[in-house]
Length: 109
Image (cartoon, rainbow, N blue to C red; front, side, top):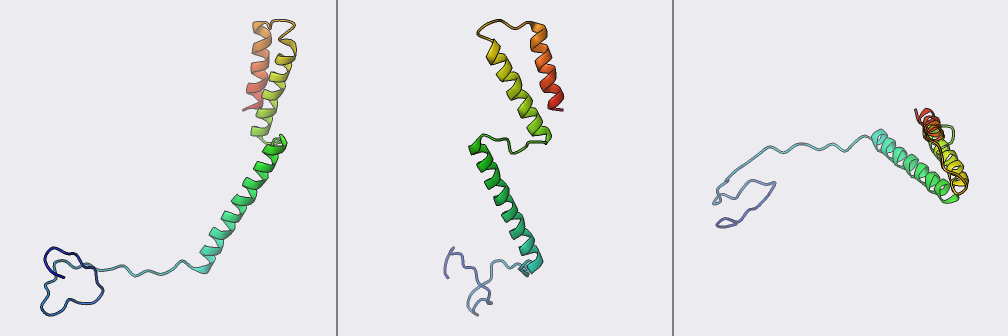
């Protein structure tokens, strides 16, 4: 190499070449097999969970039924359905709306 060209090499420079900079390299040890399997299993579990969520989402069923997220979503759907069913016929009082909001807030805790 001549001039300002850069060369990376693992062997020493030839006799007529000057070394501009050197540094120690780090030795690399691949991760142990147990770590590779742990990562593989975590990825597979995530893929299975994602597939279940997509399937549940496509069918319109909450995948979180029984959890706080599922209870919260169910309370919101119940509130919205009730309000939508009665809205064309009558207005809703502030007390009624607050009651529904409290119902949703309790479910979402």
